[in-house]
Image (cartoon, rainbow over all chains, first blue to last red; front, top):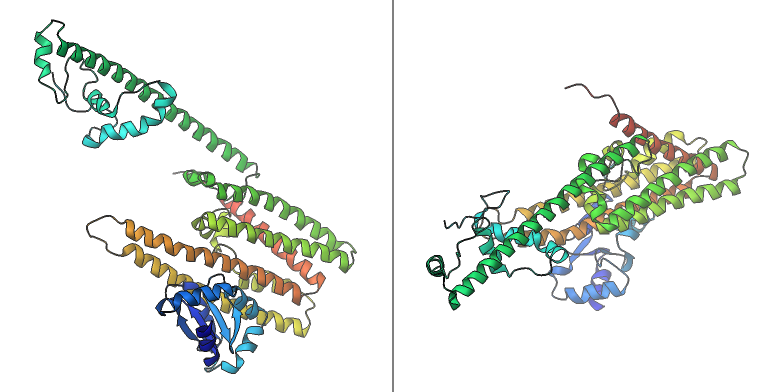
Length: 106
Length: 364
């Protein structure tokens, strides 16, 4: 869908979200923890939201939100993000987009 | 004497609603006991006339006087006599139905006591499914929800299989078994946990609150509950890391990174859960102290519970991913020892729960 492609390609890290979706919020928190400020596009506040939702579902996002795009490419939903993170791959994908210092964990 | 007060037990305070309430309870017994039952309007009259067989207190009360004084078989009197007979019959049937209903209640009560006793006996023998079902919560058992009943049954089998696998693993590690054969045990152990996660996802769809409260777990296990299960980072830090020996430098680094990633993922999910709690509380608290019923608020809250299921699914996915990452990082032997350590840890938690629940009580 055009709008998704446009938003995704114009921004490094995009999370398609809904304002009421708490799982989307969790993914945002994770990204912020990793020093990235994603663009959060709330489809329930988008007039084309229904179309976006259908398109995301067609692409395999069962949520359909959160749907995460990094560098213009669809990474997936929460499952994919978590798997990538545990394997160490997510940080590598995000490296070009890290803006702030990584927060340290004890 | 003309009486319009209802004469039902248990409560006279129920007033206007009482006859209708009684009627709906006994409705089920109508068909089983009696071939015909009086129409509802007649029931209401019956309530007012249980022991009073001489007065007709319908809206056609003017007949009362003529009935008492006029003994001739005139047409209106026939009707009245017939009506009275019907009333008596209806009252009799009503009393029979009530008796049958009370009898069924008594039977159910006896059955409940029997079940409680049996449950206690079985628990003491240590055979109880999961061990997490407290008789004081008997009112809640999953019996009213087939998805939960099925889960509890399956979980009982899961624990039995788990215990078998733990002793098999112990024997395998003490034998001189080669890695290829040992890997079969490791894969089996991992698969067993993955099956549990699948079971839990289905149970979460049946009753997410049940999973969130860890109802199937023993009390000590519930103490460590995080979104319906164990916290994966704690697993790695407390149970596995101290008991993994001969780790290479790369392995050590990988475990540290895995632990950190796991904690970050857990923190994110925890914060998402807090937001969900906040939103849910907000939905329920919306419009307190106002006129009207609270059905819209309950409806809004119900919708948000779907999100809760997603969190449970996500948390179990995290547990599964952690186990899978570990099996990639560790050698066969290390993974076998890790699985054994985890299994023994859970067994000890269950033993703690048993010990705790059977400790001698102080005399009041």
